[in-house]
Length: 249
Ligand code: PGA
Image (spheres, rainbow, N blue to C red):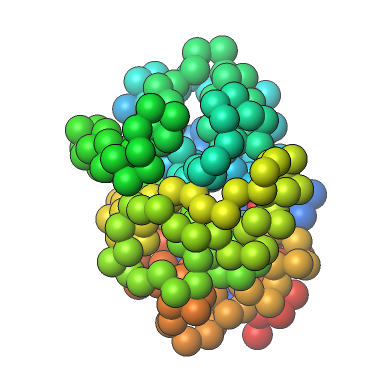
């Protein structure tokens, strides 16, 4: 049986929805939480990110290989300009890290950027989510510039699913995944769609996220740091390792 490490008490941090886990236990903890959610709701509709933060979580979850029942995984965002099957595509990355590694893969909703123009792909994506009855859970990696999904600085709480221009740091990350040519644009679940989910889990790990985690939790709510909009959501849970909390008061 899987024994999940308990997060340390959050009482010291003054953030009721913050779970702080020793770095060595973070992936185990987060994978256990997600596995529990899948067990509790076999038809869970969960939107999942790519990026480096969830990689160890997905590795652990793949090992646990939970029964996914009739769950649906929805891809959070996608680059534009990369061909289908490119390893740096978000659909390829999430497929390879998790979806395709499960013994009974869940339904996987992605952006139809190969068969439709990008705006039409966004509308189709929103329609797919609506047919599923909306998102039960959105899992997000906290971007170093405060973005969530590809909702870059300048996004607003009502920003829809849309085509976005990628920030310089997001392009650099794409280049780091081997994206060639480096994408300049992407499509993303909008802030409005994120905030419409019943539950939101925000992930951050490592000292490199300490400053932006402080801004996200304690700074002014602003479009300069789109992740700050999450603070108004009643179902927000912040799941971080100890290193990421280095700058919290
Ligand atoms: P990371 O990025 O998980 O690669 O750190 C998160 C993000 O930028 O969305």
